[in-house]
Length: 294
Length: 168
View 1 (cartoon, rainbow over the protein chains, first blue to last red):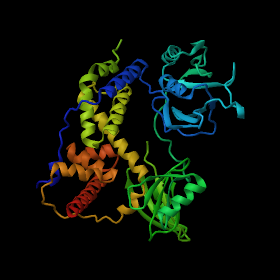
View 2: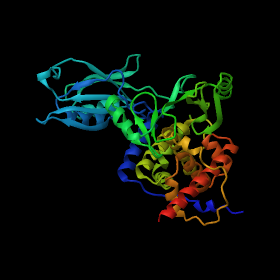
View 3: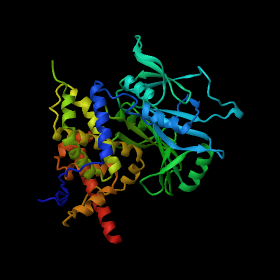
View 4: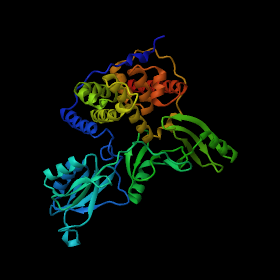
């Protein structure tokens, strides 16, 4: 019996990628090979997020400083800088690894000035301390202290041309991978609402949530911090937050659901693990989720 | 002293790059994503080729690494699109025999509109021509679950395909 889907068979044809891309990747590959192969944290970034502590620098020239951080620390730009009426940059952000760095040009009228000397030190982890420091000096930074390993990992210090001191340190190799959600904690939610648009307007205004289009009618991914979730507008569903809770063992958890007067749904094998749609003893819907064993 | 296999990777880079990029581009159909996954493939290969027991570095081995990166990508997408799971429950389990010939170009288009889990299963099984047990291995599912997924994926493909035809 022939399968009509066999017609889809596609032999991959070699395609030359963009030469700039090819050159950049070659350079990254060389660096990775020469560095002993561990992917450093700064080059395999988790999604950068505004953490509990975020440096907010006053720099003499924000545009040039950003170029410098991109070149030397592998920073990526986040949105466009906010330019004030007088041409000064009032706010700009870059991501370095998983961290966000905010900066602005001096505003003496509110006390934001570049420290004439000393001032705070930023510690930045890079994959190659020597290369980053050499690049920094090449781009006009002052070499404050050459890199050396005094027993706490290799590090050195430069002062960039825009007034900031940087403790440049060797990044620890990181094992990529997602941390599993502990048993009993929520791992995901779907916020089910009668209509998506009013909910987006409301929570966007009240909580600052941002939304990216989803892939189902009325579905929106919620971009923000904390629990991953989605908004789903439309009639016919229980209104409210439907949470997915992680469990160590789905079968036994489902048995407890039934025992306690809830309704346990069928186990489904999803790419992200096993899950089951359940209802508690008062009729509230939730999911149980067993993550795949690593 | 043993030679670092990662040097072989550097030596192979120029000739392997168009192959890996071409493979990924034909599967994901988007240059930005293909570039991203190509980077992940080569940089990930540095570590992978140093693992003991890793086969010698070659283009087919790199395509295998690329395939894993593609599956990881779809898995991430799947996590982001978990809302789909509700919709999927409405899917019929069975699929009628479908005698039509599939036009390869139009099929690519149809495939691009499917959810990541369906797209992953069909791409690995049919575009790459892998056996069901290899697809199951890559997707971390049992053979049985993979067979069921393929049936659902084909049904979804057919619905999407017919809908497009109907609208034209």
